[in-house]
Amino acid sequence: MPYPPNTVRALLNTDQVTDITRQVLTERLNAPSRQPVFFSADEYALLEVVCNRLIPQDDGMQTIEIWGGIDDRLAENKSNGWRYDTMPTDHEAYRRGLTGIEESAQTLFQQPFQQLATDQQDRILGLVQTGDAPGAIWQTMPSERFFEEMLAEAVENYYSHPLVQETIGYVGMADQPAWNRLGLNNLEDREPRQL
Image (tube, rainbow, N blue to C red; front, side, top):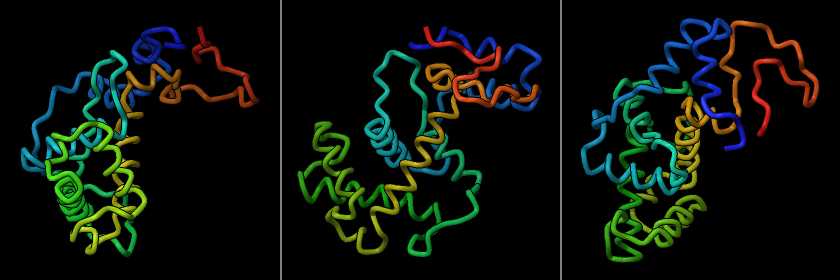
C-alpha cells in the first residue's frame, strides 16, 4: 500500500468531514454482505463473476461487493438521469446484457460463463466490449454500450468505497475545510504522503 493504512478511516473521525459524508462512507465501510433484490440469484451470481473480471480483487483487501451496489441502484429504481438512445432502460439493459453474456459463453464454449476459465471469460467480455460478441441478444442492443455502462458503474462502485480510496490516497471526501493548496504537488496538511 503506497499510503499510510487507515488514512481514510482516521479522517472520517475528524471535524474535516461533514456529517452526511461521514454517514455515507461509514455505511459503505460497514455494509453487510448483500442478497439480491432486483436480480434473480442466478443473475446476481453471474454479475458477481463479471464484476470480478472487470475489477479483479485479489490484493488481500476486503472484497468490495460492486455487484451489490448495482443491484441496490436498480432495486431502488435510481438512474444517472440519461441513457444512450440505442439502449433500453437500465433495468432491461442489465437483464439483456447478462443474458447476452451467458448466450455468448454457450455459443463460443458450450458452457455457462461462470464455469469458464478466466481467459475465456475475458475473451467474452472483450468481444462484448468491442461489439463483436455472438448471440441473438446482441442484435437487440449494442453490446459495446452495455459494456461501457456496466464498466463505468462497476468502477464508480469500487472507487467510492473508503477502503479503495485509502489505497489510492484519496481524501477528497474531507469536505468541511476549503481546499487552498491548488498547485501541482502542493498537498493540504490532511492529504496523505506516499510511503
